[in-house]
Length: 62
Image (cartoon, rainbow, N blue to C red):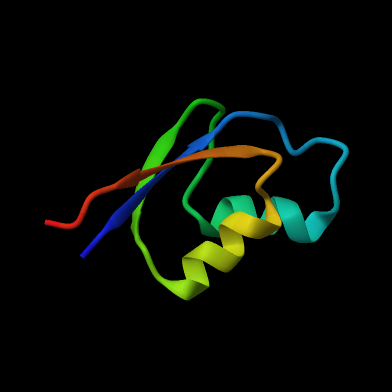
């Protein structure tokens, strides 16, 4: 299954609370932190919501 590497690049200060909550639910706590998630529609939707705050790198299928 393919994975996504999500990196927290821009602070959520000044953005709506639901976007801050989405960052938290992705498992991101500090700037420049990177987490891996399975490539699912749910995760894709969360990333789309905060796409201006994160960078995404797609990893190939294993």
